[in-house]
Amino acid sequence: MTLGARTGAKKTIDNWYIPKLELMQSITASTRKVGALIQWSADATEHAHVSEIKEPARQTNNNDYDPQICRHLDRQDKLRRFGIATTLKCGVLDPDPEELPMDEGDDEDIAELEEVSTDQRTALLEGLNRTRVNTNYFIKAKEAATVPRGPSAHPPRTFTTGNTAIHLNYSPTRTGMKIDDVADEFNIPDLRDAISNFLRLDARNRDVIHGVGISRRSLIDRPSTLPFDRVQVWHTVRLQEVSFHDPCVILPAQTLHASPPCPGWPKGQRDAVLINVDREYEWPQSGLRGHAVCEVQLIIRPMARRGSCITWQDQYLCYVHSLKVGAVHPAAGMHLLKRAKHGDGTPVGNIVPLKQMRAFISIIPELGAAADTRLTKETSAHYSSSFFLNKYFNKQLYYALYHASQRIDT
Image (tube, rainbow, N blue to C red; front, top):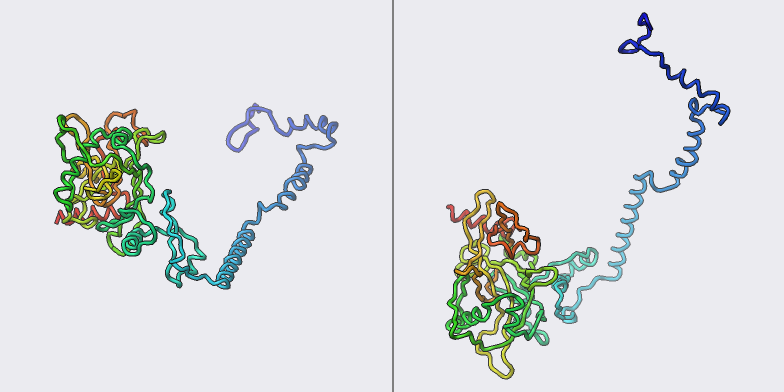
């Protein structure tokens, strides 16, 4: 070590620590205790690993995955072939439409039940592949108008207007509610004035297209008197459109909510909708021209007093808050929406017929520089006054707005 003769692979070793010499000090003690040197032989450990680990593991299915996958697929194919054979043997026949029940349900899920096929060529495929079929409300509306079966609601719960089909549940969510109770529950203090203003305009012209975002003069000395006291109330309505590129293609229906405050939604659940305000323009080809974006607050149908005649047009109505459509945001590429308000800061609300609805609209609250602690998933729409019109919500909305903007640019 003094001469530097003990060197390693890279440098001179200046100590006398040799691992093997250190290990030799435990040989005598290990021999006395176990009879073998564990450090010098792994036979005992290896034998234990074989008997305790390897052999039990080979008996489980946690190995040889490829043969297991092949056997599983083979069995699945046999079951599928067996299903086809038994279906052909039994004979899948097209049921008689006259024998099918025509019950209407209150639950929204009933609106999603599979429709019965009228084509025997596809009956077998429907029997083998149970897939959910979109309910065609256009056909339902046509059948309700041409082939009435049994007692039916009046006005019809399903009807079409333009390129949109509108469907309400057969039974209202609430029925026989007093107008003042509805105004309190839905927090609509000007409900009576809005209905009165609507009836005056509708009485002068039954075919008029009602506008939105129009301020009304409140009659302090002459409180609004209505020809009815009670209404039916719905919390949801379903809208179905035809495809922008192919009117023969029916799109899935969208559920639009207009429900009052409840434990899950402390400020109520209200969705935005596109309202037609000019019959010269038809959605979706027109884009936003001739239409207004509104937030639906209430869906009702007036009920006549017992023993009295109806002096108004029997139809479904909705109370909406208007959202003013602004310019396209340069960064987001979406239209800005702002709530229309009176001078005192209250929202501008109007009554319009339900048949003026055209499409479900997705809106996104525009957040400011400072965070608002009141904003949650359930309350963001209530506390926000500025929104983005989410044109990326679905292809239908995107194509309609895109092609409309191209026509304006050219």
